[in-house]
Length: 505
Image 1 (cartoon, rainbow, N blue to C red):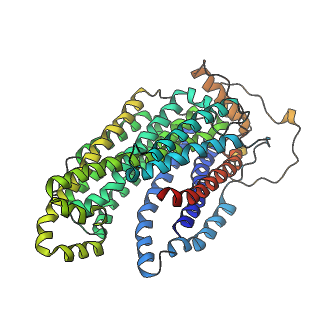
Image 2: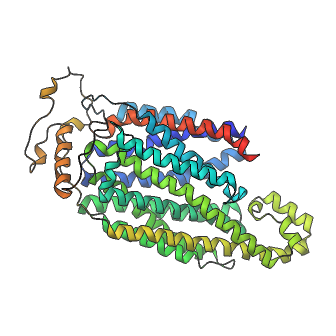
Image 3: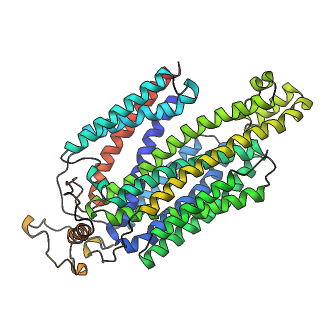
């Protein structure tokens, strides 16, 4: 049933979260910050391209075989991926560090996220001031306060709050959050606008999204190359966010008479801006953080963007529904408003039944009014999304740029798989070297110490960062991430599968 699907999708999300975080962490372990841009930019481009390819493949599988094949196809793809990772991915062997899972932090983080997600998803049905909506938001707020308290006292916190004292990392979190809100406002409702607002079919609507994703691939790769060659990233972030802002302003000017080329031009600008932005915040955060916190800051970027996306869908969706309802009431008779369900007009079968029930003559009069109401409501959404993205522009302008470090990472990150060696005595595990000559570093820990000292010079007032048990960056933190993500995903999935039937009553 639907609740089992929700629970299993939550488990699938855990795996996806681990892979996304591990990807950026491993790049951080293998390359110095100045070299990471081109690889993270390439990853962003590949991710966008795979999204473009995956959607039509999923459609073909669903129409020709079954919707279950959308999931079964991974049984054939996963072994290939696992084999490539097992035999081609570099092995990193950082010193072993004892670590503890922050169970209390994981549980309170889950308790903070789950009620808020449910409330945002169902508030448009219940009402934003309904008792159950208010209770869920209060539970989430109390869990947030408890989470902060626990993390402040934890010996090895899952989220070291001290990292937010670094201005670049705090700014990246704000930027990712508001970009996530704005992007969801575009992605979710643009398809609806195309199919209902101007009346194109689903295939054409999908093709309109293609050029935007292709130019975002180009923008992501170019952004990574520029960062690697110049060591600068702030200008890319400012340019990309301004292009997204300008694109959303242009999207807000569309009407039901807007042509497909007009939509493509607006989305072209959005795609380039999104591509330029993709790798920047990850690189900026990693460059500002100590080496041992690479895994955590990589997860921060994904976390805040995803949370922003969920909030964006909930808030912007509620405003869209309210605006659409008032628009239909202004243009149509009340009995027609009850019959016409605009959210279902993307379904050709529903549309055919509606035309048959109303009659061709009545629908010929009503359809332009419905399209106008939908287009007006959605373009108002784009204007709101533009205002939200502009907050990111302001945050980026205030961000202090730290030039990307170009120190070579040591031989411990060699792509050759090292032979197992006896563990050296603890006293001999680290090699001392001058701060001003980082290229002499001979261990991964040595490079991390250089980066930490450089960070201290740029932020003298930064308090001591508490050990979080992930040693030399993402390689060791991955174990903690797997356990923590599994606990969060299992908890959220189980809770959703149990709570949804009760909440819907």
